[in-house]
Image 1 (tube, one colour):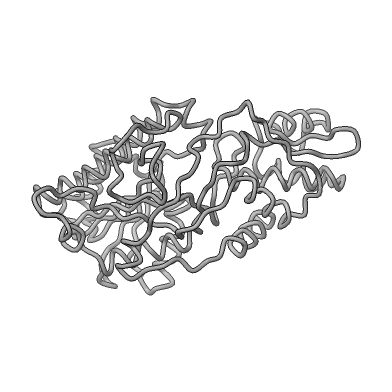
Image 2 (cartoon, one colour; image 1 turned 90 degrees about the vertical axis):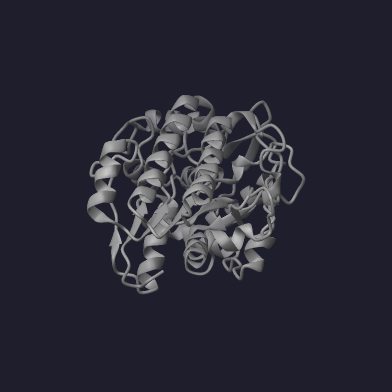
Length: 361
C-alpha cells in the first residue's frame, strides 16, 4: 500500500478494526478514513454509494460485521445473516464501482463444516454441513468470500478474503450474553474473584462500566448478586463458583488482535489475488487465507489459564446440559506461513495484557 494512499477501515471501533487502525498508524500510514455507524450505515446502499463516490478511498479493510457468541448467534439468526450480507454487498460492490485498488474482507473460521478434518485447510470450505448454532452467520461470511472472489474473476479487482481464528484483544466485547468465550471467561472470573474477596467496590466498578441487563453498581446488593448469578457467578456456602457452558472439552485456537492486524496489513502490502489463484487451474476456488497461530487448547485448559491469571480461587462448574458447539476448529495456516507471515504473541502473554487492559479501562 502507498503510504500516502487513502485507507478506509470499516468497523474501526471493533476488536479487529481498532487494532488495524492502531497498527496502520504505528507503521506510518496517516491518511485513514473511519466512520461511526451514525455517520455511515453500511447496510444502507445509497449511503455507502455516496461515501465511496465522495471519499474515493484507495484501500479498504472490511472489518465491520454483526458478531457474537453461541447464544447470540443462535438467538438472533435472522439479524446475523441479513445485516452481514447487506454490509458486505454494499461495501464490496461500491468499492468496485469507485475503483478501489485493494480490499481485504474479514470472515470467520466458522465458515468451515462442523466435522472438518483437523487442522482445517482452506480447501475444506463447502465440503459438509455447518455447525447449526452459527449457520446463518457462517453462510453470510461464505457469501462474502464468494462475492470477493467473483468480483475478482469478472471485473479484475484485487479483493482478498481472510479467515481469522478466534480473536481476543483490546476493545473486545465483554457482554455476558453476547461475548465470545475468552472475554466472557475473563469477566466471569474477575467478578468471581471480587465476590471471593468481598470486593464490592470492584463489582460496582465493573457493573458501572458494563451494566448487565440494566443492573449497575447503583443497584442493591441482592440485585447485583442475582444478575451475576444468572450469568454463572455465585456464592455457594462459603465458596464462590463460576458456572461455564458445556463440558469444557472442545478445543479452540486464539489469536491476539494485534497479530491479526499485522497479518492483514502484511497481506495488503505483499499478497495479491493473482498470487492466490496461481495454484488453481480451470476452476478458481478457495483463494481465501486462514489466519491463526496453528495450535489450540481445550476450553477447560483456557479456563484454568485465565483463572490463574485473574487470581480466582473458587470452583469451576461445567453445565453439561448446555451445548459445546463444534468440537475443534484448528486452522491450517501453512498458506499464510508460506506467504511469509507468522503469529508472534503467546497466549498467556496476550491474556495477561488483555486482563490488565480490562481492569484499567
